[in-house]
Length: 196
Image (cartoon, rainbow, N blue to C red):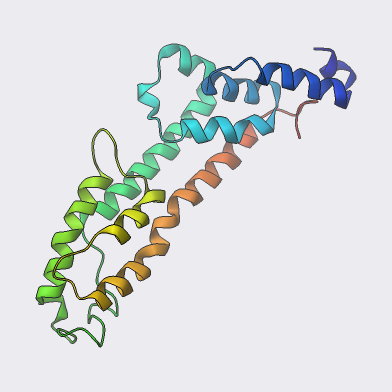
């Protein structure tokens, strides 16, 4: 393209707009982003690809993305799946180091064996099932909304609220994985007149 040769910003912008107006698939846009060095296409394409398992892409889509980018995305998805499974495997401990909250009727050293803690463990099974659902797993970015919407029947309200707030930071890992993935994909983008 002439814009690449002459490094003319208006021409470059025009060329990029023409490609964007073609309505290409997100797989093709990501492949072109890496191939042409267009960093601004990475995030929109990646947002659409992030939760689509790479094994479900067609051969043509895999070819469009490119092997290097596909490997990076697959690794991130694998790591994300492991994080979901780890959180689904066992319920997180109740707040206050397992003692429960002072206002709870079962507060104390034996809180872990109390009806409140057993109800938390039982209620967490629903969260765990949703996190590892085989077809539509609950994304970690949506998990806290789902957890907060659960009643956890039998758990004292103070324990429920305190425990949910104490585990909230551990569900922010999806954003961290996405950021690392974006950084790694940006290293695959070659320097060009389209880099911005």
